Length: 413
Figure 1 (cartoon, rainbow, N blue to C red):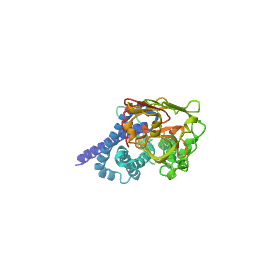
Figure 2 (cartoon, one colour):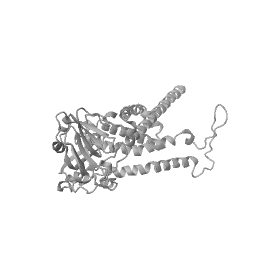
Figure 3 (cartoon, rainbow, N blue to C red):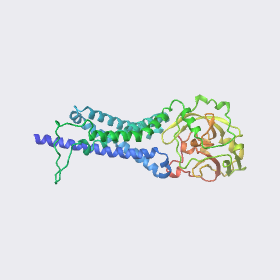
């Protein structure tokens, strides 16, 4: 009977070890892939493979439910085993909470079309928060539980079978052991490494739901563009309608953010038009402007609501130059010389495309795509070209920068 119990306990222990190992590898993959997807600089490096990485991240995220379910089957026995170990109980609850929280928020982000942008926006904040808090905790827990650290008094001896020196609890012990020192050093190292990034993320995330003026003012102060005269806001856009943007922009770029001044900036409309035109900055800011209030949705899951954009409706611009009958679509060119997007005239007719010069009554800063950017309110933001400086009408269909890298050409929200 005793032998049977030993075998059962041994088999149960192996199952727990196996669950722990699989769960560890899953968390490692999700952490690395998630940080790569979070970092905008990787978008240009990975190209289309970023879409594949995102899909793999989602699949592995769903698979992460399996070790959790498997553990729940064994949870009763495990809970009895650790009934007198409160810290182990705490750790189990924390890890389970993190895994379930990651899974649920990840599913909402995955199904952002079905749940709507507001739910997806909240899920993104939760997903980020769990990552900033949970990942250092799991790293710390994993490192400090390796065998060489669990018992600071272990000593190996020579031979095929290593024996462990006996530990005498009656002998005097130092107030601060080697184990405590190493655990503390690891904790401090993680805090120093992750802390500043977490504080920066937390500060910017607090603006979500409370208006975007705080984070937007910071962006304006860092504006790399020097273009004079500054456009003066219309009464309809200052103060912003509804109080201003509600949410926080996340800045992504595939190139270095370009810098513009009066000598190197111009805006042209050419291609299949009757009257090609090119404006310098002084001429462009004199064009008649109007105001549009719309939401801004990124395909990565975040949104900024109630933006007050001031500029020129694209329809009015095209009427001014005259579109030729053979024109089928438009290429929108970015001033960085790399980023383009193609949108057919039929698609444009279903949206309210807007050539924006101001946001919430202020010039659009460089990191948000200023001095001029395209706004496609009903499409995901990769269609709303930043640093817009050329509109070209063509016969065929243009496959833009992100569309070549796996994003859909039909980008309706």
